[in-house]
Amino acid sequence: MRTTDFSKAPPQGQAGAMFVGATRYKGPLSIFTLTFTWVRMVRDMKRMRGYRWHKVYWEFPLTLGTLAFFDDRDSLLRFARSRHHRKLMQWVTDGTKNATGGYIRIYNAEPEGYSNGVWRAEGGPMAHIETFTPLSTEDGAGPAVKRA
Image (cartoon, rainbow, N blue to C red; front, top):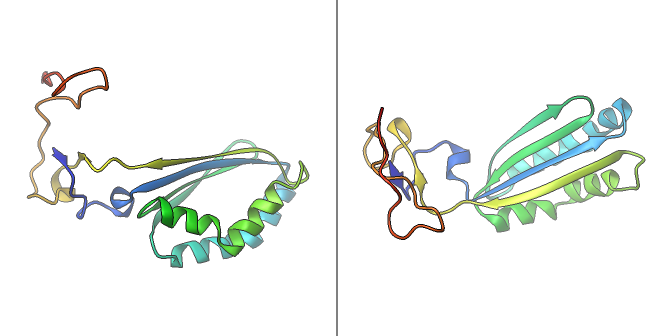
């Protein structure tokens, strides 16, 4: 069901901005050394106004990534300016001693979206949508959803 009210959604569903990033580290020693600053950085991030949720992921052999959700882009960018985050990024980008590559992407949530059941703020029904969200090339509503 389409909605603009995500008040019943989990923290990441309520977020207005999402960070996706990953770093490929030089070796196991770099990942071990990273933990000292990373633990303090995460503690600070969780205390910041606007923080919603985060998850760290690993890709073999030496890549660690993060998904982080904040109320809005400004909250996310305020975190990027924090002391421990700056310290970590300076360490990561100090040539190729500690890491060999990385990326960061920031996404903003559109005000409208979809929710069902327990996460639906306007009642609790589980229901499908009648029409797809229109593509940028389509005028008006998208085509009808055909149920099997």
